[in-house]
Image (cartoon, rainbow, N blue to C red; front, side, top):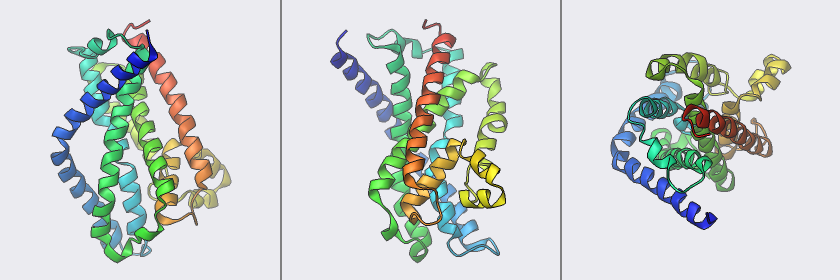
Length: 260
């Protein structure tokens, strides 16, 4: 089978998912603006004893982590399909490499989240006004880190789907066993340098958390390099995590769906 034909099918699968996503984009943006507003107001204006720039610090983290919190819905949707109608089987019988089918799903999710990330930055500026200095943003850093982060979230969603057992009922374990540990120890509420200052061992262990690279890389790109992990470290690290989680997710899903 020609690679060009497979690539065409891949793009069509992604286009189909993006079309469905676009139809519900308005309601999703309303929900996200509410979420972002609450985060910024609490941490930027109401939280006592925090630095003036903490609202901006949280703003960037909240925007960058959007795709991470979408994982629950994506995993639930995919598990429900696998346990129910199995519409994914229609994709698997297409004249395309099975690996590409799973990659198309992760890419669709990544593009959806990345689009929302870009839209949320101007909204964040409106909320923080002069506290958010957008002149510090490096577009050459921001675009690749947004795509890499959301690509990781996409494959992470596939990976958690492959790891969870017990169908939809197992979703109750997703927050406790996967989301919460990665989130709370992933530099969302604090910079990596704070973890390292507490203990170098904790700091180095934090580098094994892909979410920490999302946070540090995004803040480096938006708030400036000072005080955050070097961009040349966070971006390659994220891409390595994409490959590792993606390869393991596809391998397990192929077994789970009897594709081999």
